Length: 560
Image (cartoon, rainbow, N blue to C red):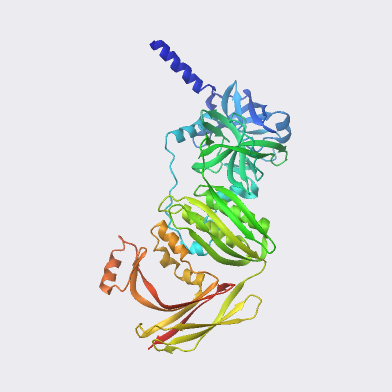
């Protein structure tokens, strides 16, 4: 009976590892075998492979293997982008995956990632050692008000997406996988198997962006592919799909597989140096984006999903909005976008989008949305999920900008309970100067003394206070509420202001604290957030204009 149980255990073990393996230390120059890949449709075909040599420790602690491929198609096209992951068998044993090559090669010579290094990716995932990425940087209000692409577009990702090609780590002369922006055939599905195409979907819907490679090894629900990283993001959750190859595009520089993606088959869970790992049947969440673009004569609507990943998502959001606006409006030239919408964050208030953006291109509009997505998904407080982004954009081919040229005040002294009359001179772009009258009433209850009338556009006022405001952020909820109270750039804010002994600690304001208390608080700055004096506004008026406003003035006034 014991012998029977032992025999059954051995049989089941062999069944679970039915594919024999050969490691790189057993590979010798001159050994021959074959690889599997798809050149058209879903038919898996063989190509011949010869071992040229083992490149010891080409990657830290990892070997790579130099190979020569041979066959009617590779002889003509060379090693093709999209072949990455194609399994290679030597003496009938799986040796690894085709993973790199060089541009302008006269022969189909490339590299193979050994199977032992690819299997380590499964071990990393199954051991539970993979950890979520953590962020420490507090959202910067200045970066939200004045967004810059480097804040949410890491150079590494920009390089991967350059010229719509993904580049192989260490071998930047060859795109590692066939990148695509084609369609989805929702009726097509191919069971995951060695040599079949696999696609990683970064965006889906009215814009499809994906990377197509080849499956190397399937074990139970595990799917190993590519033989190199996609981005090297580590632990991820991104949809993977079946794929169908439409054609091979031969090129002297670097040939490509052109394909479309089929039904979703699972989720990519690991993006490591030796391979990507997918789990069959696992679902990956994607963030829905709905865009309504109102043009002069028509309205266009778009529905797109993007992958959820802290470093990748802001980049993809930028890519989606850039692609939509480039295609539907124009790349450069005078334009104005009236932006309305919301970013829905699970368990938190919606982030309200409300601004007027004008200039010589669309990028400021895109950066403003992407920078907010980056601030939420990379916040250091909690793991946040964006449940959706909805945007309504009105577009006109015109500059809507006005500069505050000067401000005239009716008086430099005023009694309590009386009013100060102001004339605000604004110069719109290529239009005549306009004058707006503003009345600021001085409350009867304020103390006599020196005050000032602060007048300016919303963004300039916020920039002058951005460092103070940033210190108030202690929670994601606090950040969202602060963003939703942002002053608008198409409004002129006019206020009677004065200093106060009030201080704020974190997100709360403590009014009129005695000086001794303030001094005590300052001495404890190592234990509590640094405090700063806060301006108090006694009377406020707002001018809303159909222009992006620029300008800032302080008018001193004595209250008697």
